[in-house]
Length: 535
Image 1: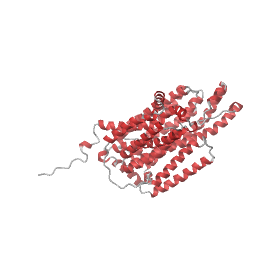
Image 2: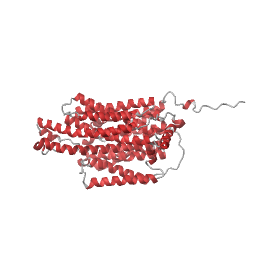
Image 3: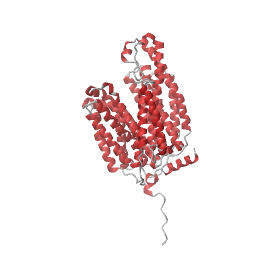
Image 4: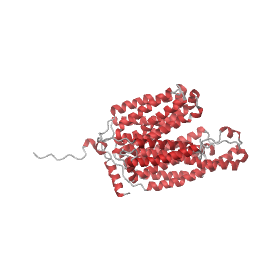
């Protein structure tokens, strides 16, 4: 009997040309998006309820830590979760993260003092940091980079939905059933996520290997992140730049970062493998993510200040403009992922993003009190488009450089650098504006500005503005326009540096090999080729 010819290398059931994801796959991804929604929603929904929380629990001097503790907990935990997922299985670590998030939510709802609420919010934030990173890594494991691009677009839509409905939902829950339900509402949704993922998510088996936890690296990294977050949040706002607290935090940050890098060189399974930076694409993605965070989120608060102080818009009017900008971010990110999924190429989106940032900074620097609201909307929308063009493209580029064993570490590192860029951007712009604003108020207003107290966000207190004449308020608008112009000028060279970095990205197509066959073979091949060529 003649021998049977060998079957094709890729059997029909596992071919990447399959008609599309199954209903079960879509259900799993939608469930993962619900987890991301909870993580993002909780940074928005609580703000509306804070006045009622302070009324019930007291602690007016501490209430800002309800938000700060959540954000710092998430920032510190995210890269650690990414590495733990690589070591112990991403599904298992994801479920641990959501359990911690739900436990923190329940405890927040039961808190009896402001101190308890702050501590439980930090716990909730630690869980939240794992949700976002674990979902990125899970999608990276479930799908090839090219197929996964469509689902990264879903994350953009989830982000937009959380941003738009968070404050409104927080107000409704607070008024109808009390502020504690702002936290309790997470429990039924999170319970469904936990049940669906536990019952339906089946990942390809990975080779067994002995995991080595890097406790020194985890401790040093968390110390550095917490110190840097406190430094960028307090410097020039809560404490003077030369105060012992700020100088101490700066010293701790430098020592912790240096010690962390040294520890990673010796660790068997480092939290952030330094070998990742041998890949030029990954290094450029990290740099671009830092710049995007520095400009995009770092400048957002000052766009609000520009709308309200320079253009004279009230809270509702500026909210409408910012909502339009947010829609620009979400739609641009979603469209860009669709294009990337179809073409397999992400290269030009970061360059377009940085170019749009530079153009937005130029046009914003020319604006003043005479600028129309319609033109201001165009300027702010351009800024939103710039942010949307890079938000998911950089994540996809990072994913494309990762071998299966490093997906979590890659996403954790890229996300960490974007967050650090945001914190440093806020601090840098605050220092730049404060130095120029104080001198400008004194120069242009003189005695009229005596007693004018500048709030933490750079705005004058409402009581002071109310006592000033229309002419003086007009003069203040010009002073703020001049101070904010310095910020916009500073953005231009930073964005142009981002353009240069983006143009250095190589046009490496997203791998489209099916996960069940070998999800990352193309990505690994590309990364190895880059490393060998020294490019």
